[in-house]
Image (cartoon, one colour):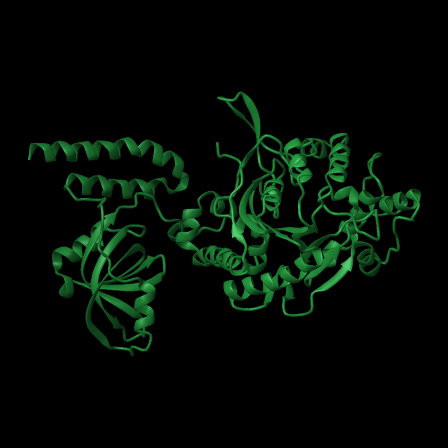
Length: 517
């Protein structure tokens, strides 16, 4: 008994120690929180167990809802179920109390009365519990006269006491910064947000199934790399103490996946986390997810066909339809996907007729008119790409492949056999956003070396860093790489499209944010 008293005193003391920190962080909710903490302190003094180790539930809420969908008003069942979840809303009516309980599958109403559960247990439920607490419940299903499917509670256990105030009760969780920073609260009070991430999970599962069913092998390649490559971006730098060398978080897995193709893996893919030390915007997060896949003996035309089939399949599996709403636009994935060369698209959508025969002075004049800054070292390819991004990209609402990109901005893509200034590369645009980037792979080691050298001598910092000559990769190419096509698709942007999300932060569980003071 003495040990129990000492334990209770210790618990009460720990609550006292929590007061100062918790109250300082709650601001205007301080008084309400103080009242709640006094309750916690009193419960611990009474020897109540506030944090249990387990509860043997035997059904999910969604299963109850599905099973008793047709139960009529006033009907009840005799079968007893055990469910567990978080209490959300209390509604007290004299000698009876209604409240909602929510688990990972859904929400259902609980009903308790003094006559059904007893005076002591009823007082415990209404006096000791609050919105936010986790409880286990035993009871039977019935439908109220108002038509609400409910659980008539026969017994319950407090599983975990919430000591903070749920935001919905006091001021709602509307502030986006708070939602991203405290995603767990977002899930509690905004069920639609949870559905976004369920859609994300379904989309990734569908992507895996699609590729697996076509003979692709899922692989893993290094995240720590001695030379960053596969894209032009500023990398994060770290240091390995044992080897005393600087390493980079990968900006793309491309060069390692190509090594696998060289080694004899004809179809490979990786759902990968990439890291780029760049700005944050509605479509950029420094840590993001892509899928990259490579297939031997195919070119970029084959990949266009595969990509269209894949995204249609993912959309049907994840959201069950091909007609989507995105940023106020109607997107129809079932319509014919258009294909234009970059130069054709500039002429069609921008009404600007240019090519590599156009004088540099004329290209510079067009750029000035469009408020495009032109660097001294920029070649015609870069200027043409800047014009494309300015006048064409925002207009590519329906699914559109843009192909044949300039060599100057495509250091890893195979040259076009009939147009030496261009490469066999395409990007897919939907809703005015780039969704995929692909090309027939450059497999000529001599040509690859020259392009690495050009990158390494660039004035552009990102090109210099990612243009370091990867001698081992060149050595691998020199052993011979088969003709192949490779592609990367941004998972985050694809999920934005499928869920009509305005920001990449809406589809990343824990996006990077500036730390709070």
